[in-house]
Image (cartoon, rainbow, N blue to C red; front, top):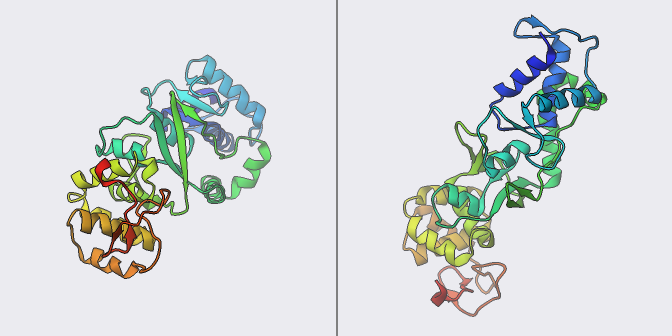
Length: 303
């Protein structure tokens, strides 16, 4: 069996609409190591591991055969898989970077929480140092004791490849210190990761500017928070800072009249005499919630 046939079959079996150079390099490395595929011997393999020239030659062949598309994005280590259906910008982003997920206004759209259609694609990713650590761990998991050999071949490593635009959508990446796999859902049957309902509501008050602005956020809370109250409260209680809990407590309890034992407990986080604000990046206003010791620095008439 020719190695190009095995390589194309393996790429197809990933069922991803997009593959990266690292994924192709990993498959190629494993084929050279095993020298067989699905019980059939691979022909014309005279060494134990490929090098970058081999990788380059095979990817060019796959492109020439019409199996891969190199025009999907401008980066030369990202390829569309032509046997798969046309992917969305969200799916492309999640294929290119294994650690990002759709968030903020884009997640609100996915969950049906907004009637807005964002021109930007909002993503959340780990901080650079954490991304590098996650990439190292993934490569160690993928390759085990063969990792040093793989790195020595010059084959593509797992690295950040996302660009500023995908499918005419501008990419807005929020690097989160609270990034965790528990914050998102893996969508069945798609190469897609989206922030959970609870995390999406958490993000609305944590970063309203990325969610359509505070007035849109308050509208979404008014229309939907009661239905998702348990999920919102659990997310804020587990991952929110003191000010996150105060803001959520004010909106849920004082503005919407919703109550939960956890919300009452959040009142332990109030800070009398302080200068806490409902919206962190808006100017302070001398209009207060006495119960939550919070400056309500919005124009109520603008809602």
